[in-house]
Amino acid sequence: MRTDVSFFSNGLALAGHLHTPDVRAGHPLPTVVVIHPWGGVKEQTAGLYARRLTEHGFAALAFDAAHQGASEGEPHFLENPFQRAEDIKSAVSYLSTRKDVDPDRIGVLGISTGGGHALYAAVGDQRVRAVGTVSAACIGSLLRDGLGGGQDPAVFRKLVARAGLLRTDEALGEPALLEHIVPEEVDETTPDHLRQGHEYYRTARGGHLRSENAWVLRSVDQIAQYDSFVGIESLAPRPLLMVAGSAAATAYFSRTAVERAGEPQELFWIDGASHFDLYDKDEYVSLALAKLTSFFGEHLKRASAKGRVA
Image 1 (cartoon, rainbow, N blue to C red):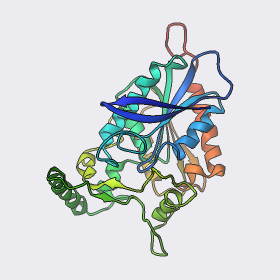
Image 2: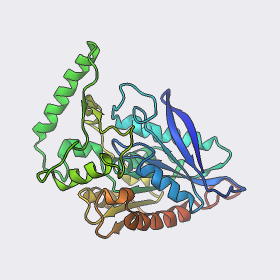
Image 3: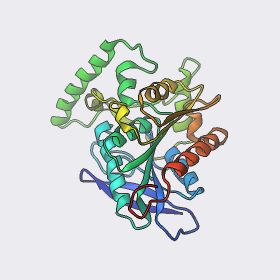
Image 4: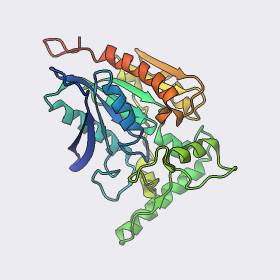
């Protein structure tokens, strides 16, 4: 069952879908906050994972981040990672006020850059009892270093300089400058990872009318100092599960994050899957969900009488 909900984050109203099991439970539920990727909305892969989690007895909240989808925030399509982390904490606050949610059994699941944001938020919010990621990535590293690393630092310095000029343009009344996230069109010269992104976001496969393949370019100066995995060592002893495809161009993010994280942590490989395969392809998503539901089932156990997770 899906319920449309709304909650506030830094004064902005965020639009969400709270997914719950079809058979009503007689007790507050363990709940997972599901975080969408860069450029995504709650109706896409985040909503798919949220719906599938309800089949295993969880409630799951998928929501549009501030400045994205049906949520408030101007300019629209601004990508502020620090606001993104605040949105996650605000989602946890909202869920903790609901009678049908057990506030001692809340976890987060982030997909792609949403996985990076989930980790960043959870490090600073101990109400989050367990963290899962799928195809995790850090938006800060992607822009600073390029996919896979090795980007000339001058490229990012130029982007940051341009972001400052764009702020001035907006102060003078110009509209925010938008750029595409994945190519609008592809051909034989398009890198495979971008081709896959186009196939998911810009076709009937995963496209959604509010996922417009746009971001505000001056977001760069808010992303400049951001690292999704800073302080990851202090997540422990809360558990971490990172799911990644063995063929994903972003797999190195999960590998290096798990190496830095404290115990308990696990990196679970989906053989042959690419980054975007784990968004919606059932043969891969089902494997990921089997692992995730086992993980959250173990670590979001029923709270004891003293209000602590047993």
